[in-house]
Image 1: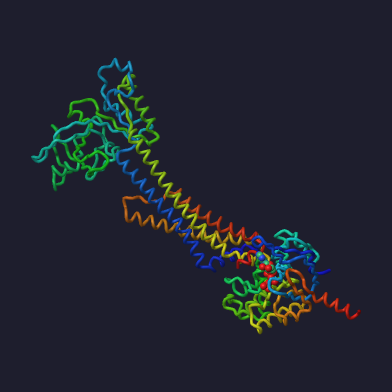
Image 2: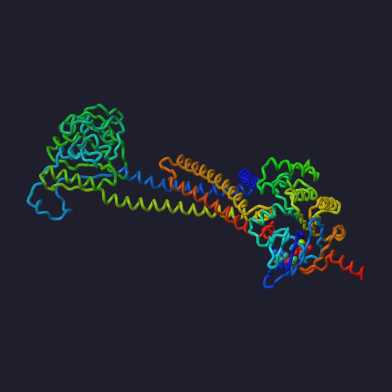
Length: 237
Length: 402
Ligand SMILES: Nc1ncnc2c1ncn2[C@@H]1O[C@H](COP(=O)(O)OP(=O)(O)OP(=O)(O)O)[C@@H](O)[C@H]1O
Ligand SMILES: [Mg+2]
């Protein structure tokens, strides 16, 4: 069973009197533990796709099955539970709460889920260690570098130990070196079995993924898995 | 989200944006303070006027001898040619009526007062101890007429301020013997000067015991009986009971006239009504201003944080957690703002009273309660409403406003 199963997904936006098809007739399956890079020109629908996968947005048509369950028809509260426990989201612009410290930002999903403070502190301490942020626990986001902020954001996305991490251009606001570090962190998570889907403009980074999806005008232009299969066909034929 | 976490989150949100929090609290407190101070002013004006009117002697019922034309023609009265005297005992009988607080018989006449070779004409009022409180006069020196048998007055007099000045100048008046008409009376008190007030000018008055005055003027009838009813609502009842009692004492004949301060009271009522309306209007306007102020600050504050709400949703918060967090925050801001405003308002009213001591600038309780609850309610409603709306958005829509 695929972790993610999209069929006939449509996402339209009304801009004035024109309709933008951000996603058009999208079918996609992603298995648990995969490492997928989503690429394509600007405006091709990459972010829209990732938002749908993260239940931050809903499709106009089509079904989205996560772990075999149709999540598009869930109530808002059930969707909140899915977001809380099954999905970690990493944004290009970090989206940390400016008034909270690094530790509090990392703990936020647990606080929202009602996990007791003792358990939270234990897990945050571990996460700070894992992400090399021990000395930054009490710093506010504006006292952190870009790379540190994104590490806090990744720690926050993983603190509930979700099986799926979605990252929308996680290195877009970082220089090459810190970007590299962040990608390494994400890949380490994937190595532990977490399904990782990364939107990126960077060809090099995309190439590191085991599977590349290229989008254009809201459609899948190419899927490396499918390409492999057709390549296989060519070889065998 | 746990309750303690919700409260802490709300507290951190309030303290995390000092500018916004200061503005909200300021708006709220200005609103509440405005209500408190303005209604204190309005109600102070009202009380001031009430005070002026009560200096006239309120709740008065007055008995006049003889039948005046007010009741129309009555054949029973037509037979009686000379009305029965209105006596001191008539006045005394009214003291037992349940609706009556005080009774003072009044006999008046003019006479002359002499002391140390000085002589002048005076108005003499014969009455009893309660005359002074009924008319709201004050005693500046010495004491009022003694409480004694109304029919056996002692030879004493209470004189007006101007008479004291003319007869005694800088010398003490209390204890001196003066001649009034053909009597020698001891001065026991001096009235406070009334000056050009709304009431009767007592400065040239000499008050003596009623029986003494009647003997002096050789008359058995009273000029008036002054009656103070227990309160304003008791006036009609008192009027009826007085009439009934006197009718019985006069063998069933209505040979007296009982009047109340109806005309004065009617004006008084109108004025009071207008003033109360004015105070209510002031309060309503201040409340509206306070409400709009609070509403705007809260709206802006929450709208600014739509992005944060989107983030919280993306991180798995339910709409309920978000609503509760914003409710707690709005409640904290509103409570602090309302409290600060209340204190500021009371301080302002206190300052007003210090600067204008004659002006009783106390905010009425209803205005304080209305001001506080309006501020709290608008603060809560407009703190929570936009948050509810934002919490219903899809996270991505809310996030885009980050
Ligand atoms: N909220 C919205 N309202 C209207 N149009 C939208 C909205 N969000 C996305 N779109 C449109 O949908 C299309 C796909 O947008 P999307 O953000 O998914 O592109 P993208 O591939 O992520 O581009 P980029 O690489 O620049 O981030 C674009 O044409 C965009 O203008
Ligand atoms: Mg994008």
